[in-house]
Image (tube, rainbow, N blue to C red):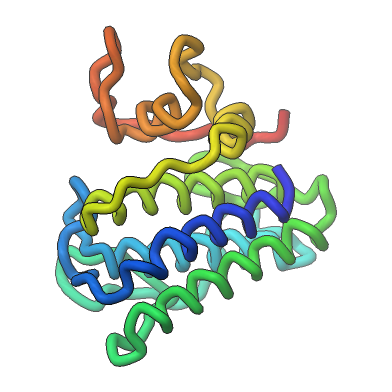
Length: 204
């Protein structure tokens, strides 16, 4: 996947979230224990972390680049990137957009064959772009459920992420439903909801 895929996913997030800025973003995000606010923070944090992994010339092959991180509350996500509550949804969306731009820039400029650490597998810039897209799409779905918004991303973006990261994709359903099933969000006919899952971002 390419830098434009990352910026496209983040632009879709901004497009969906901007009209609902006045809603309460501190309600649970779908089935998650995190709030909608925390889930967007987590997504921005992932995009930032993926960009950071691609940056060092001597790639981080065994662990994450050691930025400090912590939780703002018990049970909340572990984060490096936080947004001050008084900055509101506009500030949160600006941080999400900035983190996405950082990842897109690193995918564009890092050597295409650079391999670096992720908890699931070593990956290259294309893989980190795909991971960033999946983080945005599935967590935006979580947030949309919490904010009672009907939202569905484009099928081609879902299909590209599936093709890059998931090797056992249901071939008898649409790409968005398949992505939600592979990430443990829904059940499909004949396929119960998954209680554990992970992607494989090793270069193909």
